[in-house]
Image (cartoon, rainbow, N blue to C red; front, side, top):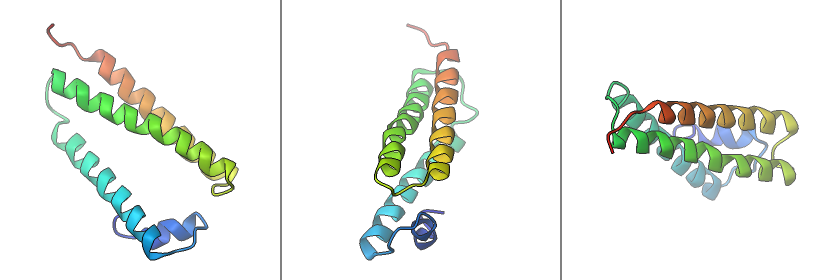
Length: 108
């Protein structure tokens, strides 16, 4: 959505749609889409140090978004329902990635 419909994302959050905002949202969309492709293509790979790093990266990404969500709420950019939904989704994803990271068995 962010990559292809940045104006809809911005207006959905009540943001003023500017060329700079469109560019930033598209950049976030490109990052998210790239992460999605990576995760899709390694989904059937076995346990490895590389898989563990990919899962840790995903977990870190979602943990780092949490303060951004709280900042958006504290600045009045996000209303409580938006921040609650976004915070909850990112927190659950981070916990899920941590869970599967801890399940990976790699040799020392």
